[in-house]
Image (cartoon, rainbow, N blue to C red; front, side, top):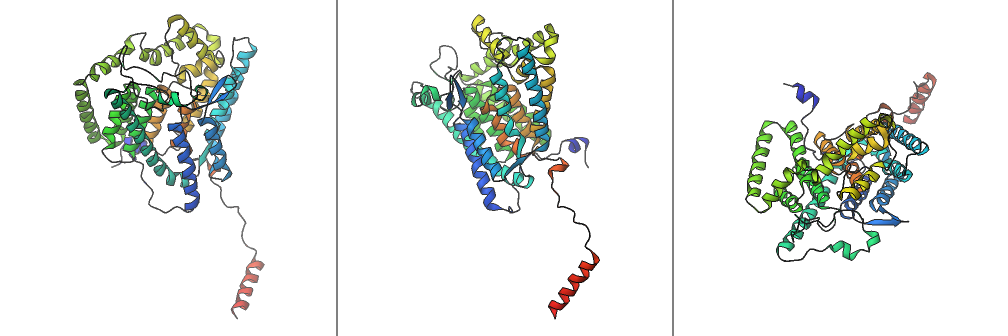
Length: 453
């Protein structure tokens, strides 16, 4: 029996490996190598930057562009028609909004921000061919699981070294010149005020929260690929070593999505496992820390409130008090200036997530068009409902960044380039040559008869 739920949301939660042999194995191996290098740089080089003038550019940005150009030159990446049209509309409206803000006298409008927006999201217009995407996605996801397993080992090792007496120091920051290390991130952060223990960032991640989120995505992908069981407790221990709640939130959202797909048996098993983990955690000294973090959004000075509550309330207050700006926005860079002023006044870091930053800077018209572009990038032709929902929550809610290539390109490398282009013009049909002329058919038959003689 086919239920309504099954019809709307097919229960294809797992991402299997195709059984058929690839048509062009050499080309697919070359493409997989390039994608693997890009994914490796996305995870392990996220703190490395290229100094440009007085600012920094994350090294992953030019690396991804170089990889995209290489794959496009080999005809492995092609233009995704639906996403390209949505991208062009969204960028045109965002540029128009920025131009209006600039000409109307808005102070300190950052034209560099809108230029970076256009450049950063340009690779989303590309995608792999359907057959190649289905063949390569499972293999790339397996390599992502291996990479995040290494990341988990680094995170656990960093925390165990501190318990063994090693005094925390930023190893990567000490080895790499300061101009080539990303600045303005909370890379070094104690588990609580005055504690000699520091949250684990696996030495290489921008922040412990980034470590937690990457590990949570790795755990979800491992489940989708039916990985070996020992990786699950390894991921969980590594997430606990970061003492960051964002990875736990991501696992909660992914768990709901998996429960929708896998049914009641999986839900009951997952609830039992979570209950055991929570009980075991409460019996350790870390239990008190996580318990305090669970209720911290009630305090206006907590990191949870500064990330998940106050940006949205400030967005509502600002848009309701300035209706004329609600449609066109205050101009790119406004949320960064507001966060800087908030930090100077209250000594607290206000962290604008994607939605309030987008609507406050570009307004409702351009903001909604950009959200339509994101819907096309994350949902249209997606190979997995669970993977799409997990990466969308990671990108739009947790990471609080619209222009960070480290955040933007993880969903692109794991999902967007593998979404099918279902537009009818994307499938090229052989040209119609029409019926053969009778005289030509008779000539061909006569030539064949003479050849046979």
